Image 1 (cartoon, rainbow, N blue to C red):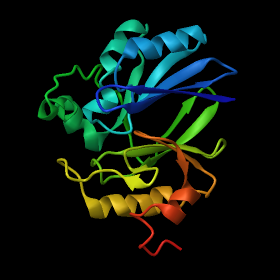
Image 2: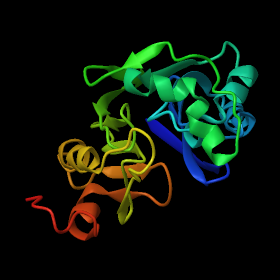
Image 3: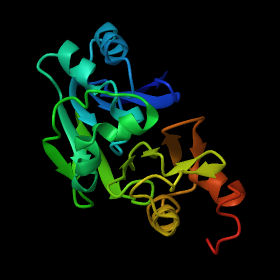
Image 4: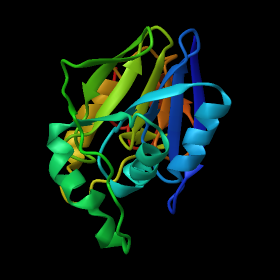
Length: 215
């Protein structure tokens, strides 16, 4: 069974997710935004072993807790990131543009692309490349549980910003059409900020999408 523990962390209230296969106790952290010790403590309380960190993208507010998590959890979890966002990771997630200077943590050793499959225990996830917010943004989707961790691609009633370096509105809309709206309507969308939603809800009511030909 897939267990999902959500945290809201950091200066811009980023959603981080501890996910685990309860049958094996193996766990991963999606976007450890801040306070890596808090995430590690929650895993230890549940007797979960964090093996990997999966980054939807490399903005500082999605990886700011990785270094601390790697110090607390031993052996340190390996980090997965799309190669398109490696330059952003090397620039500390663009943190200095916002007045922060973070440690990005261990260098990513798993390079994600659209052919990659990742897993936590026996639960498999598709990696869907969804650029637009950043060049290497990805979505993690498990069809078994109908859940997509979509970072800053789409939110409840909104979409990701495209005014930062590497952003593209045209690419983002294309990514939403091909990588999000192609999923079943009852798929839960767990975003990088704000409440969860579903594909069907956003198809019908998201004001950024209702004027598009999405049928």
